[in-house]
Image (cartoon, rainbow over all chains, first blue to last red; front, side, top):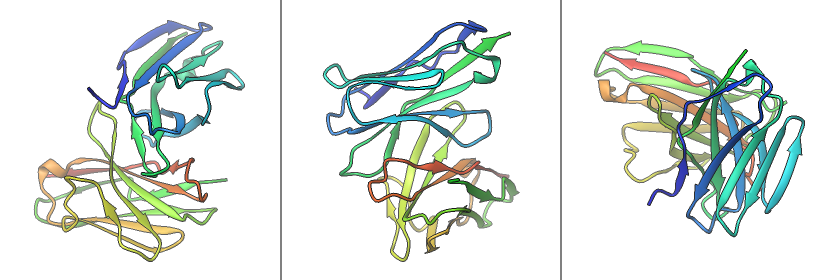
Length: 111
Length: 116
């Protein structure tokens, strides 16, 4: 079983739609949960990070963590064509101090 | 704030030559820097972690004699791919962390390496 599972997509939605991106993980040692956005041929950009179960909101983005189910989500409201990118979930356990990434979900928002 | 730069952004070299990639934190001091490699349509894979002034810690399967990492200052880390081969062609990305807890890493724009 992979440590992190993430649907690669591509996920295509119309502009204005609500987007739901998800990752599951198996490592109970993961303590920090992050979402990064990566445009083609660019480095990842941190969108959200959290360390507890529950929801965290930042503008159009909401990160959700369910530690009991080992499941994290990123919701994007009112999606825009500029949101078209690959979204990577990332995890860190404090003991190892390095990020473990999901494979990324490619999102396309159609105007 | 928290800007990380990489140089060069892309490089083409002949097989057998060495290539150096620089990673700089422009507006903060990076206690730790990380080097990742990303193949097309795949996720980032950690290669090594480096702390300023000490030897880098390499991930299992990464040859430390082939991928030389130097973290000489709190704002600069370099990755040298020695005797590069076509299979080393990839997208190399660095990240830097400024906090003690290291929960946030800021990524550079990446360097695309093509070995002919």
